Length: 360
Image 1 (cartoon, one colour):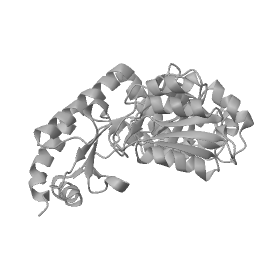
Image 2 (cartoon, rainbow, N blue to C red):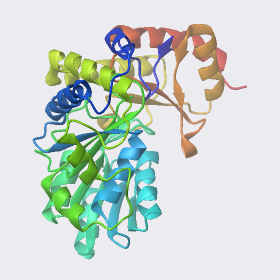
Image 3 (tube, rainbow, N blue to C red):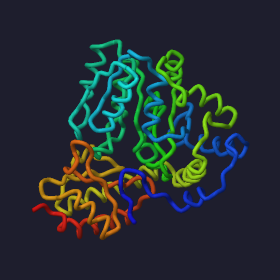
């Protein structure tokens, strides 16, 4: 089966073998070695000298942790959104009673840097900015480096959802002055869902000391205290830790620059192949993601039928559109354990399935 959705992503054999290991004491020295090893490797991929914590959670749990550890009820927050996951970040902040200013842009279109600057200039009380690096709902990547430059001119906290980008697309956390960056194990890290990894800057720690939003499970202070003992505050997903420590070795052996080039190469093959089939990309290709390709269905393709035919007859699993893009696009995930041959087989299956999924 070719699983090519934006996540979960296929796990390499080494990860699956690692997860077959027996359970160990999560308060013992053996787990402490794994925790320290995985964390040190993660810092290299995050490109940070700051703290990195591994939380047993989905990526959304990491997003909530970013909010509750740096903000207080009533704090003004600027949400930059051009897709489903940008909206989710804002919803989480509102759920904890932040005053969210939503700067929404058309789905699939780039954010307007001037609009961000104008909003920050007009309201000096804004404490933090929420940004999505890679928007899987639309298959596009936002220019986080440029967003950061604007945000930092106004000295605001920058909280980043990099769940589907980090480890696949270059994101130098320290160089781009990102205060909290969140990612999830089931994306480019090539292991099952269950872990969220977050980096915390010194500025974020300073905000943490003042933050008044309720938190218990997500408390970064607890995470830091327990990490010093080689532990996590709560029972971790031990099997996924085994896998993550293993795939991090694979990633560092390949080298970050090689990983970024491989994802760019595979993504270009996917985009070129889609166009060769007479289809068009949903976002402007200039902003197209290197981890997921979103394809317009136009009025010709019955997306649910296409996805069903691919799955049942060709052993290929793709994703449809989300929310207001449901039925209007389909998406090909190509992140983590992926090579050119994987995309070649997807395109061959699409070529056969598309005539069977036409409307009318």
